[in-house]
Length: 185
Image (cartoon, rainbow, N blue to C red; front, side, top):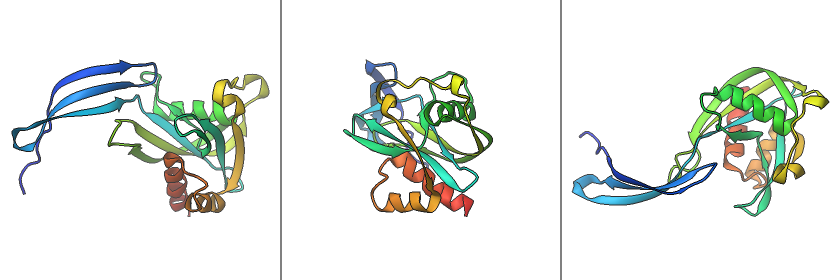
């Protein structure tokens, strides 16, 4: 077996730079001496939380996602947009902001690229347990799409059935639930 090709980036152009991601075009050296342009999203990364309560239920949120044009069941999740912040701290902040919950037990569950054909976004999902409510006076004020966010709890078995029934179609949510089902069983 020979060494794999290096796929060196010969040139890069930032075509769009926004507050959440940028779009870049790379000229990449291909095997055999050729070159190809690859356009993709550069993303800060994200975290997600499979929050499991004392009854074995998981906390899901239902939120409108404009690119998909629909409401989706999701894990509490968010961008890793605070430079230097540990992923577990980001996950705890997102759980508090989106589900009004705190957790005292955290465990890494799974890490993956969300869509490696068009983005460098890497996501970490954690299992959070020993849940308690965020005090009312300390809750995050939800705005824009988050203003209509719904929080619900489902038995883990039921949530996994929702994945296979096509009721949960958010990829990180589906993967997180399946990984949690495997880990917790």
